[in-house]
Length: 509
Image (cartoon, rainbow, N blue to C red; front, side, top):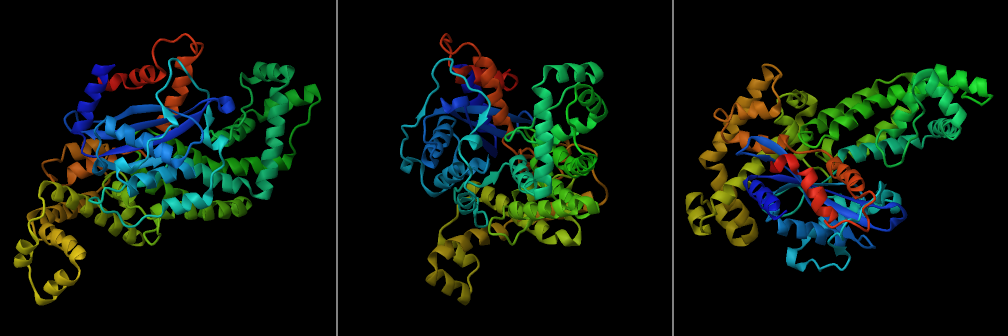
């Protein structure tokens, strides 16, 4: 175990930027709770994208923001991860995790109080599939208060939290499912599924006819409602035959028609949710997916129009921080990743996308400036003033000394060769993608052009490697249950060690 962690620490050291993914899970009955932290990053020496489990903490109640912040902080200390190396922290929308990331941004590590609620895992303890969201309702107001951020400064050491995109899509769908007509249809569909699944005769007859049975939905499983409705439609003929033979009630013809419209409406959401749940290289897909869903909802059929309008409103409100540069919650990271993905960057080159494109360009320049500052510490203020001193500038330096420090850095960067080279590469890249969409993967595109874009390619490789969801951590919890099944009181190796070695096996080989 020691050698494995040493190997992973060496790999992490080579990463320029990484994305932390954080999620929590509880056992059924809430007898034990856990927090998982993973890191996704591009590894320059190996030319690969890795997603590794870093830690698995057992938490006692209550799951406060302080406690979660401490666990994340301990993980970063254990793996020698400094704050300016973290591109994003991807979490769900729970108010406690939102608060935890805010605490990490606001206070130095040593000021976060040690928590008595976090312990190392005891030998062999496991868990079942129960999300923290089942245990604690979300606080929408807390989410919003904790999610507002200013334009990002890569030198300030603050953490940028991004809500898990797949999870947030699910929240938009839940908003739409509250529409009266949809809620009634889902109630009837669930009642039918429940009555069939609890009947051994109906289940057996259905399997004999079509080899399939009905699927129940689950509040914490993305796309499960869509899967339930799609299965009902898929085996509708056989299901109605079985129900008629057994004298059981089926749905009205109008209900089946409404279900078909609903499945048609939800299908693109199911496709894009799966797309955004990949372990890596999905951040650049966020903006195209959201824009595609908007277009889908705007062109839907008349029958589904009321629900589509509700869904569109929720989508725009929940994702304003990604699609609207005017939003107080705006984060340009997904837009920048989209711009640097040659397969999808064309969506930002239309006139109506100009504000988003400019925000992405500004983000890329800020990243480049931060890298420049790390490699070239500012000279003394007097040296900089002598280079670009004017009466008005001198007055600013004298009156606003904190602003002056920032201006000095900007003068050094923007007057230097790095800035000119970066802007030239950005213009050259835009010309290349305008000539045609690349058929290469983003990684291969930038790896094959490192000599053409020496300044831009490292930034691009880091951005297009990032994930858009924390689904990787959720899959870890499923594995936890398998590895600990039946071993609760007999295991000799801790659950964390077994999961760490299992999840990171390919990376450490």
